[in-house]
Length: 257
Image: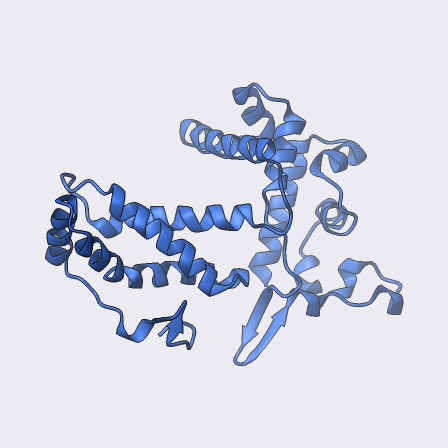
């Protein structure tokens, strides 16, 4: 049973069928011969796979019925495009197809709309980042990624920042038994204190682990809404240094949370 529900999208999850490997292969062969009922049986027999995958996205506060439907589209694409001559299980092929379909849906329905050209540049940059990391054995700087792509540093930096998911005020930070602490619980009213916003959140012990420069960067990025390029110009260091310091600061905060 998923999330305490017996039904999702009208499907009784407690009665979903599970196919064996041999049954899947037999149905795939029948489907390739034009048997539509075999396709339907393959689909219904793999819905548990879709259910298990959408649980990975449960923390995003998305409608689970919607994610299930999108995941089903990915499953159907996997079934229709599966090559029975390959020595691979259908589930192995279907998982990335289902995840990809869900991620496209989340990306295209994000609260903050990002232009297609900016998104395309961001994904090119992420791919190049992975390639350079494998090649050099370390994470490349934004300057190195931009140089490799033949793009401007500021354009690549803006594109990468544009696809970062915003944090919801209802994002859970910590749960102890039945009590859950959300982001909004950690933000106090500035009108009741003369201290900065960083000193007004309950996780001040973690924030005290930061150095002065890291703290200033976190304040500028998440309180004043500055970009990494703007902060770099303000404090006189490179954007790559700001990126490294910000990443280190966030890692420190996560560690002590």
